[in-house]
Amino acid sequence: MNTWFWILSWFLSIVAITGNGFIIFLVFSKRQLRTKTNAFVVSLAAADFLVGLSAVPSLFFCKMAHWCNLPHAWLSWVHVIRWLFSYASVTNLCSLVLERYIAIVKPLKYLNFMTRCHVIQIISLSWAVPVVFHILPAASIVLSISILFPIFLWVVMAVFEFLPCVMLIFCFVSMLRVIWKHDRAARTFAKQLSFNHRVVFKAHERSAVKMMAVVISLYLLCYAVHLRCSFLSVLNVQKLCNDIGYKVPILVLNSAVNPVAYAFFKRDIKKDIIKRLMYCASFKRSN
Image 1 (cartoon, rainbow, N blue to C red):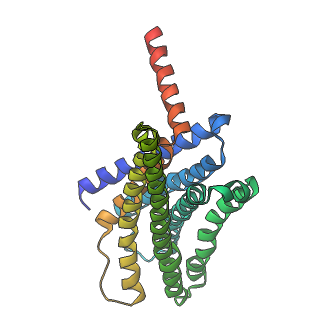
Image 2 (image 1 turned 90 degrees about the vertical axis):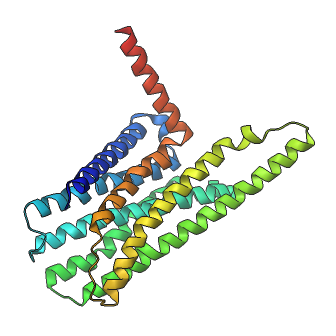
Image 3 (image 1 turned 90 degrees about the horizontal axis):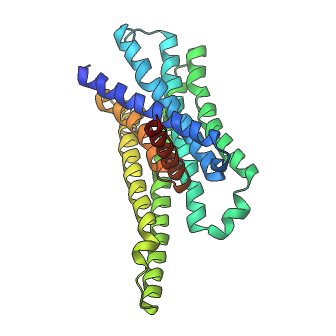
């Protein structure tokens, strides 16, 4: 692989580890940030942190040691663990988007449904589902049963690649529709009062929706590549997926962007970051 590939991949990996690690530290270090929504943010950040920690380093040492073409069982375990973390990121992203979907589209049901117990159950399920489904490839490695691998590909393609794409698009379109209705109602109300509240009322929501559109588009781009390879593998097409040169950077980029999109643009976390930066700046001036 070219030098630019490793430079870009390691840079994105460091950004993913640093950004998600900072979000985890930020939420746990301040009691006011330990909200229900931020619980989903931390769970997603933990999954993305593990993606940044496993995707590029494992591939790098595999290539540098020339082990990638050897039929070692431990190498298969490395791949299983790496994709386990990436699909844990998918399920946690879906959980976070589902929580925001209920809050925006079904606000009256949000307080009754999104209790502390339900939050713990959803987050636990987001980690349990990829672990349970990855028992199939683990069993195929231990028992040397090759028939389990095609079953695993079908499961992965349906549960972790196709269904999340459909769900994210549906939730985003539904939230966009609700925000558009709110914006239209606010403009009508502003005209009745002969006073323009449009910019003040919806500037933050519009910027958040635009950022969500960018992140979901990046996610769809990333897992469209995986869907292509899964189709080729399931259909037994004798054509290799020689796309690792852009698959791995896009995968890590998706994990690096998540803390920016779903945490740095949240008002409470953004306010705390600004407060910490101002404190650091005043401390340097005083010295």
